[in-house]
Length: 109
Image (cartoon, rainbow, N blue to C red; front, top):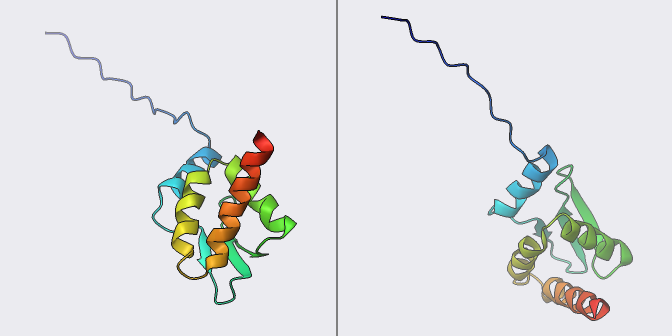
């Protein structure tokens, strides 16, 4: 009786990059990217690239540029959910997000 050949184990490599996996983990996470503070003119948003909490003034150019970058990463639905959640702590958060999305929609027409 011939001996069985042992199977060669080949490790399967994920087709996604490390960056894509990191972004996907933020999308699937139940933790919010947004950290509301008492003064609703300021907001902390977690940067998914390096994990830092970025302090931003709401309704500033820097704030909108950061949101644009996060949307570019594919986090728009996550931001929708997180801003709705953060809205309970300060109306300005959700209002600024809705206003931003409305402006982006008008620009796209």
